[in-house]
Length: 472
Ligand code: ADP
Ligand code: MG
Image (tube, helix red, strand yellow):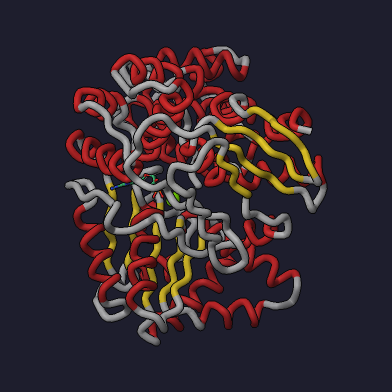
């Protein structure tokens, strides 16, 4: 059974995750449709439940059927982790299932029943509520996010009353937009019993809208949103070019705003750069406050790492923390990813997180920020990947087979080099900066919308030993 599960899991996860999280699992037995697997540590168990529960469920579903259950046997950690395990959630119809608290000093093996029921798979898809892990308390403040954080807090304290309505948070991938907007939501939910706070990603909103049209339930859809007291719409750039969705959102926005309801939005670019968005909607965004999140500086990265370690009850030497903060300066998500891998390796090999382990792990995670990606690297990779000549790539040709690789090359240069747009254009027969902007925009949109393009980009990133952080 487990072998078949693994086949399924392998298809659903990346190689890296598969190796880290699934290969170490030892299948123990199957009794009465219950599969028992042995995992190396408490941390491991929590991580699986937190991140791979739906993958596991898929696998169980396919092998044991809908009544299949999963049970974990946990090898007790030798390390003395002070803190209780991180609470984990299995998204469920409306609330989260509380974690079964392990009893202290239980003899091994500790058995935990996974609380998931197979019917939850659908609601997992539909769940658009807040994740209680995102709070202000664990959102580290730094110069990079001070305005956004304090504006967020002001809104959280007095939703709909401040002039920060709407509040628009923008910033690059992995810089904390979702965390911050959800922290606002959680804060309000905690303090105002009677306020209906709703978090929804723009993608989900769009899908709901499309379904409503298809099922002739547009009225119900709109009505539902008109009842919200605090609407949090994440990643509004996703609405770009979706005229009808924007129209409906415009209607909802106006209604909520007029009734003094709070609107909070996030976007991966500033309203000024949001192309494909109706002007009337953009002008509404400007009614409130717009604040950006920037890349955290070294000190903030240190603080973020410390916070994360502290919340997981793990101790690492300062010099290792500094090494990590120094090596990963892209975004917070990558920083966290590295820490998590470190913890996994440490718990798997039952060793301390020291400099050696940190070095080895970083090398594995293929983030190599020491080595700069050069223009030549990019041209090499792109011509190679798409199998076209450099002269063709640099030419004025408007053939489709050439235009896309050229746009990709521009996108990568913008991403990896510090070249001004004009100089990027210069490498392609002296095109001007607006051509470059257009290229970057086109490619980012295609990455979002087209799985193949996303794969292509991931392949290219890998050539530079970079990980493409996924926009959520
Ligand atoms: P975005 O939505 O901008 O792509 P997220 O909000 O998903 O980014 O943040 C990525 C990860 O980094 C999350 O796990 C989040 O908790 C963490 N993170 C981002 N900023 C901070 C911060 N200032 N303090 C603590 N954690 C942060
Ligand atoms: Mg996000």
